[in-house]
Each structure stands twice: as structure tokens, then as C-alpha cells.
Length: 368
Image (cartoon, rainbow, N blue to C red):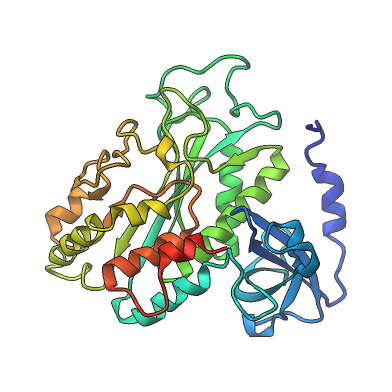
């Protein structure tokens, strides 16, 4: 069931101008049991200056697929804080980890395990940059801007396109871009993608655990912006069957050694390690990724590992500029658009830098 009422910006704005009488609103956001985002607001008596000033909170986990009804309290522990582009002022967005009342991380709290790996390999100074692709739909579930009951022309003019009939919903994308920059998300760019109404934003380079933090916040901001425009966001890796590109989360990776002169040696060593754990990585690289990784539409086959220079049909791509310079980074093109970035960055550092006792990212992904 859909409503034709989207948002009443003018009426909303007059209330947003009201003073808060010294109070601050903190919007707590977290990852729910279906890899989605939930949020709720809390009034604080003063402006927080760090996450240490933010109180632990809780929510009903039985309503988010994170706890049974007879023991439903799940605790929110703040881990990162951002400026709120919707309420502005001193108001903040608070990213929180989910914890069970017995002191264990909730089943969808994969951040905790990933953070242990990053702490153990802090000397590697591993950077990530993630390219988040997504597809926009209208309120009735049709691909945004597409002819009702029909299709646009074949793929070709839409990637980085300019002009009516080539791009759709640029206003949504630009609004999201500004919201990310205001919030403090290290957003490095945006572009229209190969399929019409498919877009991409890039976050990074980010060090360690902050990559996952900022990608989740950027996703939250996108969903919130889309509310104002009556647009639905899909992170499904193959939202439309047929001769259309899927959506991924290409993950760019670089350690300190890879960024220095002679770093190609370490890039090649990392790719060799990745080739030996292809199956394990695929297991945490997103649901329904088999529908996307077919060997067509700029993807490698899910069944076989491959790598190459400037090859967008490979599992791992070495940019031509990196190959020329002899140092830099590599791109893992396998992750789907619906990944949990903590799982992807976690298994990457586990494979490239080494495992540690008590942490197994494949087992972590399967934890209930």
C-alpha cells in the first residue's frame, strides 16, 4: 500500500525553526536483524563533544529481528557521532553497536569482531574506499523514471550521463551528497551508473573500522533523503533481471606497504592470498550475489577467481595507473551492493594481514 503524500516541506520547516531551549537531539542509528537500518531520537541536556558523552540506550529487539519477545531488550552502545544535516544546529547522529543483555555482541553486530582485527593489525594502516551502487524506485515499486509498463533504451548513454532522458533523480543524489559532506562522511564522489536510475557514491579512503562506520551512516542519510522525495532505495545486487547491470560495492584496498615504492610486490601477494580464499570471501560478500556475478555486465563469474590490470570483468582489478607506478591499491569487484561493510573489510584484513585467535569472519557472518 502506497500513499501519494510524500513530504510537506513548507509546514515542516516552520517547526524546525523553533528553538530547542538548550536541548540537543541525538538520533541513534543501528543495524537491524535483516541488514537494514533503524533509528530513534533521544533528548540530551547538553551538546556532546565526543561519544564518551553519549549514554547507552536500548530498544525492543523483538521488533527488529534481533531478540525474542520474552527477552527483548537490546542495548545501544555509541561508537561514532556525526553532525545531523536534517535537524542541524548542535543535533547529532549517533552510530551505535548492538549488545545483548548478557554482555555479548548481538548477532548483527559484526563491527566488534572486525574492530579486533583492525586493532591487531594497526601497523598495516589499511585503507579502504567503497563504491556503493544503488537503484532508485518510485513509491509504487517501478524503477524511477522508467516508462510505465515499458523500458528505456538499451544501456550505453546512462553511465556518467548528462541530460533529460539519460539521468533520473539527480536532485535526490545531490541532496544526499550535501547531507554526507555536512555530516562529516568522507564522501569522495558520485556518478550515474550504467543502468538508468542506478547511481553510485564513493566513501573513502578511510582507515580501518571507520570505513564500515561511514558507509552505514551514508546509507542512512540516503534513505532519509529519499523519504523527502518519495523515492525508494534498493541495495539489491540484481534489482532487475535481463540485460541490465547489477549493483555492487567495489572495495578498494591499500596497506601502507602497498602505497610505498615497490608496493606492487605486496599487492600481488595480497591477490595471491585472496585467490586461495575465494569461496570464503564470496560467503560474506552479500546475499543474491550469484544473480550479479555471472561473468556478464562487467562482473567475473562467482565460480572462479580472476585478476587483471584494468579488467572490469575480473574478480580483482589493478588500476592501470597503479600498474604503471608500481604501487598503490587494488579493487575487489566481487562485493554486492547489500554487503555489511564490517564483514567485507574484516575478512579482507584477515586474509591480507593475517588471522587472529578468537576471530573468524566467515563464522562471524553465520552467527545467530
